[in-house]
Amino acid sequence: MKRSLQLLLISLFFWSGCDLIDGTQVRNPDLTLDVASQQPQSGESWLNGLNQRLAYVYNNFLVTSELSTDNYVNEGSFFNSSVDNGLFPDTNGDFDDAQKAIARLREQAVYGLEVILPEHDTEAAGTETEAEMHFYKGWSHLLAGELFTALPAEPDGPAVSPDTHFQRAAEAFGRANQMAPSVSYELALARVYYNLGDRDQAVTYAQSVLDQSPDFLRLQEYDAVNNPSNLMQDAVYDRQSFNDLQPLPRLDFLDPKYGDLGGTNESPVVLQSAEEAHLILAEAALSEEDLPGAQTALQNLLDLVEDRPVREFNETEEPRQGASGEAQRPNSSDYRVRADDSSPWKEGLVLDRTAITPVPTVSGTSVTESEINSLAAPGFDALELLYLMRQEVFFGEGRRMADLGVKWPVSETEALNNENITQEDRTAHIPSWMPGTYSSINEYTVDGEDITITVNLNRLIAMERGNRFE
Image (tube, rainbow, N blue to C red):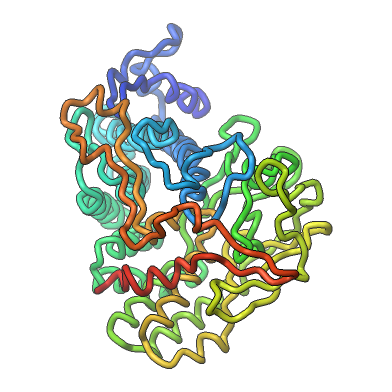
């Protein structure tokens, strides 16, 4: 029964842009929505479908969002080949797919809350099942706010701002937490209030998470047999002989975060981790010029990262060539790297890909305790270090775009089917302080065994965008 409902979800939603045309037009003549909804525990089955839907959502945005930043560059052609250059037109099919997937998740959660539970599974109302439906609804708004300049919050509605989506996410997570208190919901609230710049609320929920579950982790699972498989794993590991996605050399030691687990098992994507709570507390302390408080939070973060698992991967078949067969990308632990031409050299950032490679699978960082202790003031240097840690800890999770302030536009498809979409909605946002030549964020120079990254984006964030709470 659960599997039938999951499959049913694919046929329930036929879209024009981000609009749900008619969720009751089921194509399978032997299984109608009414019949499926009236089965025992239909709420739990619907929830299983929401979980599967979120896996599809991540498949529809994660790879492209990582390519839109300095985390990865596309050296092949199988995945998006334009975002590396800062080309974000509203005709980009990946943006359209991402916003449709987010809207499907939202509407599927709404249907569960407004139809499935009150009409077909009243026993599940007010339980953890309903709370999780609110969570998935909130997560759709959270992703809409972090990834897009604006998106409709309802079918045929106007595109609303990221802050409006964050407010709606806060409402949904808040309802979930009131109904069935959970560390997951509190961490989601901390993330939303962080995005809104609400220091007090973000700190309250972040501290509560750490008090209850210091090593909290929530994963988005995948299923290679019943679908979906993990597209990010395909991009960074399974297709290694195709050389598709390559990390910035400074981040090489974190790649691949998702790799082969053996058999038909797929790597899960990190959805939430307690690491985020430490990072929020550190940035909040810096905003109040509390350097010791920030250092304590970052040292606690280091302790947690050191306890996270490391897995060995075999990437010996990956050619590590540049585009169009250009020179070999850094492929040996002999290299040392610096974040720009005024930063210190660091060793151990590039791994030897001719041997079995140990890689963190939840979080990792190159920052050391001595670097944290040597911070002299709660200024640019401290904030740069914090954003480096955010980049490394959240590597491969689709979080970097939000830290950069880069946002995709509403798609042309949505605009053609929704008269409320404006030209402004269809325009991507790239902060004015980002490099004029966008592709330079992926560039570096090699002199012997010394690698210099062209643009230190974490320094730019610290100097130009500043603290999220200020």
